[in-house]
Image (cartoon, rainbow over all chains, first blue to last red):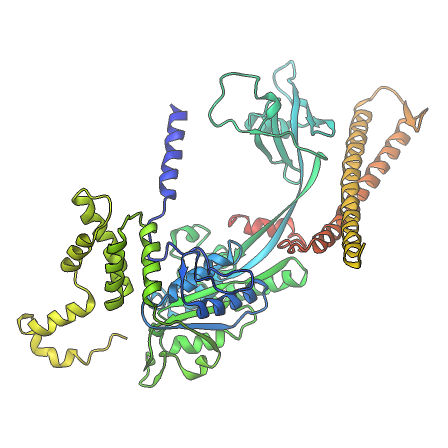
Length: 464
Length: 129
């Protein structure tokens, strides 16, 4: 019964591991070769060679820890792969470098101030590498012998024989160790580790040499090799944690559960200062390394002037991450002011940025991207249909044509087709309007919509 | 044999030398640990034995009978010395491995050069890991 339940749990875990298909789920990296030259089509990336090469150079500097506290702006029209490049950078950085992605509008929340949200994002992007060192005794249990006193009460004594491939030895056991051995259900043939400082016993599994001892074995039984070398080892583990995680743990009002609930609230400045001091102390003692990560802020024009001045200041800090921002705006109003500025970013901040620009895709590239998306979404499409879709992509937008893929696949499945044909695309194209056709429609039938008498003002409305 | 070839052989043999050194150290560690465990066993047995006043101790290939406290003191000293040797061997291993990786043009291992956190410090962030 219990075993069946356990198996079920495992199945559920398998299911949750399947990821949903996101807009940039096909990106695996920046698609650069060893000389940092961009390959035309690689790792889900297509075109934008100049921008990708620039991103690659920056990536190399981040990896070597050469730059910190710098900022990069990826600027370009909508649908030219800004987010894709940022995602590619994140993928290429690997597990160890912290990467935080957020949208500019995320900082406007009722629960915390704008600067608090930004500070948290900054600290999520700075890793601290620390090392844990423990002395352990690791070996295969040859024999456990426990002597119970004849009276039934009183202290038990025992002996534990452990071996590795190289040696074998006997340990005398006290009352405490016997208890924890019984609790862990350790028996002869198990591979165990004993933490020398705490006496904690961990069962790693059963020895391969004992695999044939019994025919019936629980499904959880794990077989491991008998350890090699010395019995008493020194084990070193390197962890990378983010400053934000340390903040949350030490923010007394919250406790560590806050890390999982996601709602951390505001963290006191004193807590942060204490942690900064502690980390600085560790650094001086050679106990910790700072791993500057990457903070990516999409739609950065959504930030207002207060945030920008905060960013200006925050980038000066000696523990600042690399800041990557993306925007699709040209010369526009800086939020919170009446001043116009390129990309909606104040000139003084703009001055600190390295700017990478992306350019619109060409027809060939659009076709390639659509092809990759088809593969990603498991959609079979005829060559003709792909050509038609590419044309639609050229005339409307890349995003619109990507959305058509899934819809067209559904239509073709409805008519029991195996491949998406030109007709399916046409049908979806007539069902769903793109932005320009929708605008056209509105212009024609504006009179029949509600509140159209206000129409004069709405034209002036700004989305920023 | 041209100059490039000679240089290559020189480089490879230098790498082999360092690698051999590391392997020898590791074997030495195993031997020392075996000795340490034997010493520990001996100390335990001596401390449990309450009856006899004197005991046999094997030195080299000669058995010597000596008073138990003396034997115990000797063993304790041995144990401490072995412990010390193991620690210094382990500490010496780190720069050697680093050098080998350097010669093989491998990237530095992340956090390899860090000093470990103390028990108390580790405990305070243990919840997070």
